[in-house]
Amino acid sequence: MALDGLKVVEFAGLAPAPFAGLVLSHHGASVIRIDRPSASTKDALCEGKRSIILDTKNAEGLAIAKRLIAEADVLIDPFRPGVLERLGLGPEVFHSEEHKKGLNDKLIYARLAGFPRKANETTHGDLPGHDINYIALSGILSMLPGTKEKPSFPLNLLADFAGGGLLCATGILLALIERGKSGRGQVVNIDMVSGTRYISSFPLLNAHTSGYFSEPRGSNLLDGGAPFYGVYTCSDGKWMSLGCLEPQFFATFIDRFNAALRINGMKTEWTPTRAKQFTKDDWPSLRKYIEDGFKTMPRDYWADVFLDSDACAVPVLSPAEAASIDPSGSPRPAPHPDLSRTPASIKPGGSLAKILEPGAHNEEILAELGLSAEQRKQLELAGALGEEVREKPSTKAKL
Image (cartoon, rainbow, N blue to C red; front, side, top):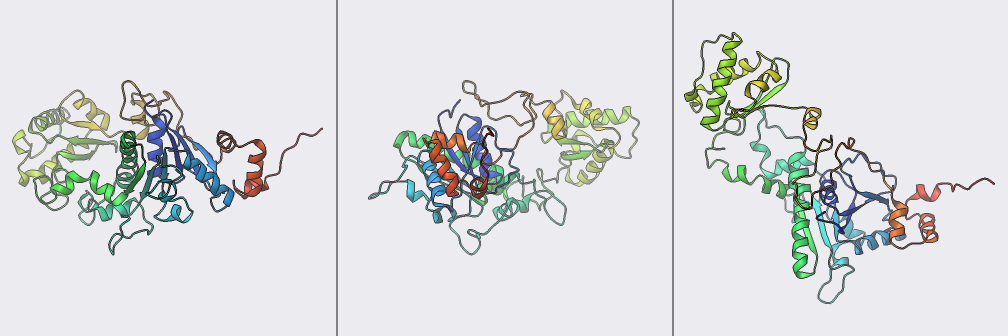
């Protein structure tokens, strides 16, 4: 695989950082997740990763964390600014400077924060936040579809995963390419406000200056304003997506739609023609016509009507339905993009996402560091792996 031999240390976090690690893991990187003592996790973004519990507030636990990072190619820091620095694990410890040799000058140190690190009165600095807060400050939330009263948000996809985790993985790969030239690592700074702005370049650059987003929110082509670009409810409560922006595609849609309604005996006072697509005065009538029409039959009927056509009308699938037609044959979303010579690690027919238990690979990882059984036991007794491990009664065979 493309990243075989790459060593990654990922401090346990939520959503964006685990996703960045997952991208690297899928392509062959060895990813070790450092979990806190007493940690419980529901993180499903863990395929191919291993876990060790380390108490970084314990001197011995901190030393092991530092050693793992000193031997790694990549570190993923999911914490708010300053957390790892206060532990003595900041970039300055590992990167060499003019008069100081670092522990690992080849380290790619990826820091994933919510708000921009260069704080001012409006960027919130190291305050807590979540996806909805980051997209709010990015400018893009104000442009998203919703009701007349307020915009809606697309789960936690934009900031956490697109502007956060995916751009983090991209930054790491760019830094690795540069390291191949210079032989040196560097800090990769990602914040989810800036990341969301970057992946939203098209709408933000076109805001109020082009035909795409020149009108108030909810009245443009791509934000729910156009009746030929939206989601419609069918008679069974399921949905069809419609995206026939181009005239030739709208022509295919409206011809098939009108024909299907005639066959099913729907009578209306007004029937739209191809020429009505961009007549904005007719958009309210066109929207009602399409809404009423889709409600006459179930979703799968309409899916068949537009199957193998240029109408740009396809069914909205549930997660289970989408998994059933995924080319990988797995309920777990397949890694993407697909590389021809060095494909990602895909497990066809694999089970649903599993949870990586914190500390599941303590012994294995410590042994790889060269620690003997006695040294590993001393770490346990010192509390480096958490109080639970130190206090766990030893199991001895009864003679």
